Length: 219
Image (cartoon, rainbow, N blue to C red; front, side):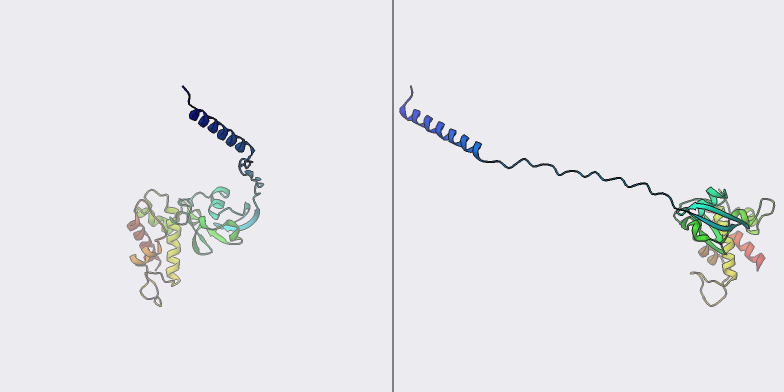
């Protein structure tokens, strides 16, 4: 049985609900948020390699190459002149396997661009000696087994040759006790000067013995 109070509450609730519905439909809602447009990057055209001509002397022979200006001296020697005796080790100038001699100075050929050596005189391991006529340093490495696996040996030998030239020229090292005195080819000096050449086989003692023998012979 329904009572008047219940009926009144029901009507009042219905009216309130209807009014609320009308209000909801008349209140403007903000437009739905739109995702920000994604900009598609325009691909840049491929950079064309810049090529340049460079001329230098390698192992006594003149060479002219047209190279990408980003070509390292190491890659020019190995890939373009096919002088693969010079090894690519770390390619970061840390192991010394790529050491060559440029105008009398040893350098890491992986850290320098070929186009920077216009007119330079470059000596690689192939230019020091041949199997039938070994350079004294090459012969000493063989005698003292300073080459072990042999991968780092070209850089070791080129560096060793330059080290003795540095000592002859009176250039001190960090191990030199007296910077005004003529440096000597002691084991300490040789180890310090050869510290940029890493031998993974651990043949350091044999390498020092080989360099020492050549130093005494040339003294």
